[in-house]
Length: 184
Image (cartoon, rainbow, N blue to C red):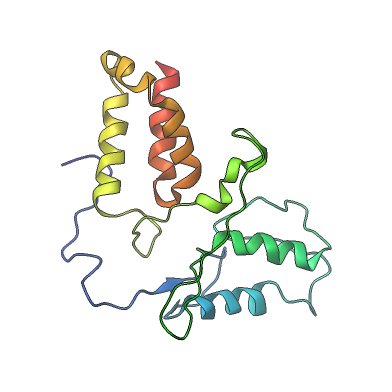
């Protein structure tokens, strides 16, 4: 058994099940939501209430974007949207519209398009990754511990760093892998 994988009695995702969305706001006691827009509306109405607040903060999974709060309500709402996956709208005929993505000015420009290219892997109710991506990241982490494997990782360090920024559910394991590579 690989260290870090929890054994489950039943698979987390069964075919035909309806996805659920859980509020990840710090200290939120609400249950899950069946529709992602319901979750988004819950965050706007219950956590970022324009009538009650003087400064606004983001507490999504202990986010540190506005450590001292922001008086700009719209700036905080725009930031909170980055925590939600963006899916293309579907036209009534069933055809998908093209979603325009902003292109970075250059390869190393501001944000390098990270926000537009986030990858959301399958995750359980705690936000932990599931399945093959989790297994692969844990194997990489375990291989990175040994000094003799260091030369295998050298060519892929940049890709691992990009995945760290883009793969939401795997970032903890990829950070450990990169930390192991730098500490050797």
